[in-house]
Image (cartoon, rainbow, N blue to C red):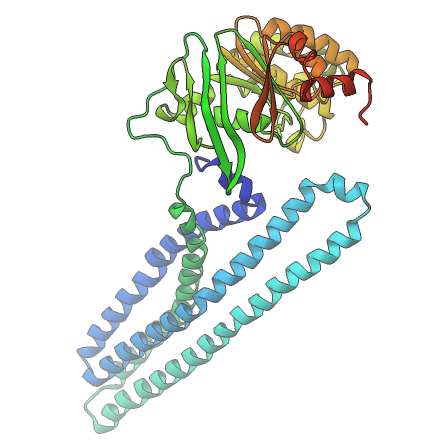
Length: 476
């Protein structure tokens, strides 16, 4: 959960879930195998050797050597097998990641009629798992065959050596029966020992898949003496901010000053760096050059969680938890009362939706909010931001998924919400940002125009061109 945003952007969810669950089970398997299987068998082997030593020294040496050879052989074979077990785990992780990806994008599969193509692709994925699993199982044949040979040789020697003593008259039949019974019990335990060793190495292989995550270097770190962010006014300053992602300049020398209560709109062509500005403000990435400060505090000097918890956002795509509508809204403020949550619902025009739901606000919205329309999910995002009640508000295409009537109704509410708050609005539809105090036009990562709507629309440039295209209701 605490790894950087870039980690989650580049790792498949299904594979992560698979490794986490397997690793948790592996820890239990390792402790159980060691405590309740391997250690008792080792103690029993030593005890058996000591007891038999009292009656027949050579036989006791054979018993102990047989047990040790049995265990060492199991350790060697399983050690050789371990990389193949890891390969099987990786193949299974890829399999689960594929399944997760397809179910997450099931609508795309259905819309394009690609069910058969997906099943065909899955066949090649599971064929890779099958081949690696069969190769892994070959080691079990070597393990089983070697153990049978070791155990067979040991039993033969244990039967013959004491029997010779009986024939010489130096050992009684009762002692012979005692030795046979004791050794037989030990060899039964040794058979289960091979399973225990195998289970231990499987658990070690399963646990091994979690080790790389411990070595991942955080891209965004809290500094050793980082403090909580304290916002009193809500003044935001981007000072010559430059950011490159994988050697590609995304934002370059951006300077913006938002006085407390100012409404800044950021517009421009797609790929111009608008959303990146938000991600940098939230410190999902660290700037390469320049700085971002809030009330004079460099965001790199404060704790990440306190920074993000001090702002409210309505993202472009509000992804919801598979929980109730009420809990999804209350997520932004766990201390909020029911009255506050209901007020936020009404503010975001969700009361009409709630009235139609079978269990009202206690209705589950489905995974990622699939039971709601795009506009309804976005209204939940707006309700979350309202409930959070922060001095800094970020609207990232907050009304892009709403119909014209609902957008018109919510715009008035958002205007009321923005009063007294420092607000950053990311927008494509210029009609939604006419009330902004200042508009920053971004292109290719740089601020190319800055001013109010009335000023920018009179200047030759990107803003005027975008305004003329949108004003006409179509784009050429």
